[in-house]
Amino acid sequence: MSLTRREGLLAIAGIVAGGIVANVSNFAVTSMDQDASGPPPVTAFEPASLGMGWVLSEADLDELGALGTEAIDETRFEVEERLDYLGGDVGAFRAISSSDCAAACDSDPDCTRFTYATTRHETASKRKMCWLKNDEIIDSRKDAGAYVSGRKR
Image (cartoon, rainbow, N blue to C red; front, side):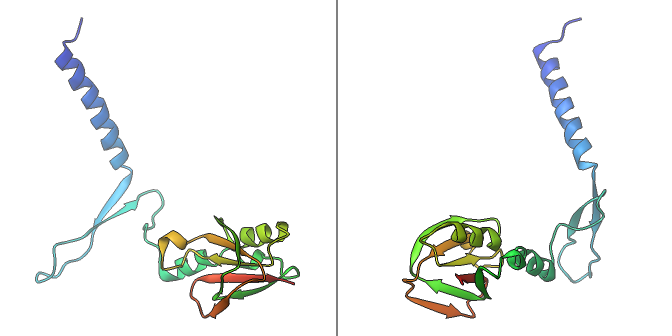
């Protein structure tokens, strides 16, 4: 038995559609309660196997943003949160954590300080950025939001 081109394409489309239906069936769909005078209902998608939502709370974001700060070797660095050193850049790169930023500074003989922008930084392009600094910094900003900075001891 041979298939026509049309029948072959319909068979392929059926397999693809079946795969999509199989993937969608792994999610539970729940509707939030709605007041008759309010906006249309919102549907929340939730992985059925995990039993939790995809949206992180502020507390979760704070905890994730602080990951790695306690792993900095404080015998090697004087660490201060919410401090941004300005100027004196000798290098910049994206780092996984503030401890990776400190380790990079520790291994660079030109680096005497570092500034790391955490995942809580309001500018997305600056999140997880590490700036290696020397002693030629221009100034520093205290209470500078989502930064962690350190100075070699």
